[in-house]
Length: 97
Image (cartoon, rainbow, N blue to C red; front, top):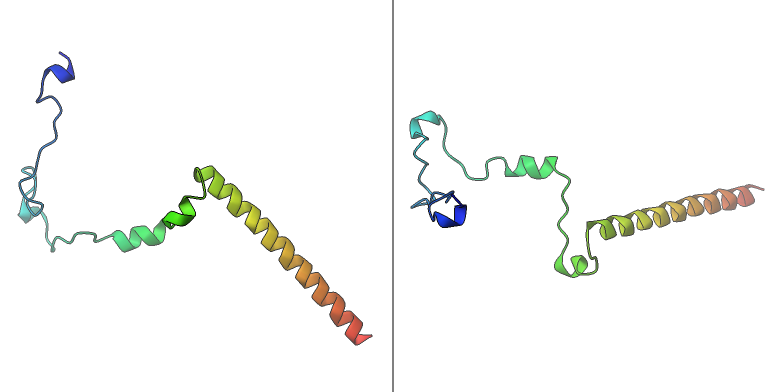
C-alpha cells in the first residue's frame, strides 16, 4: 500500500490544546511544575550559534562565505595588532636612546 493511497497513513496527532499532555503521559509522572523553555538559557549558553541580522545575512550566500569572511577579518586584525605592537616597541627604544 502506498502512503498517498491511505489518507490516515503517518498523520501526526493534532492536539486539541497546547496545554494538554499527550495520552501516554500522566500529570502525576511530573513532580514539579511544567515550565515551557525551562532549559532555553542553558542551551543558549552551551551552543555556539550566532544569528545574523537580516541585512548582514543578505551579504552572504551561505555559511561557508560567512566563515571565510570572518577568517579573513581575523587575519587582518591579528596582522594589524602585531604591526602596532612592533611599532610601539621601536618607538620606546628610540625614546630611550
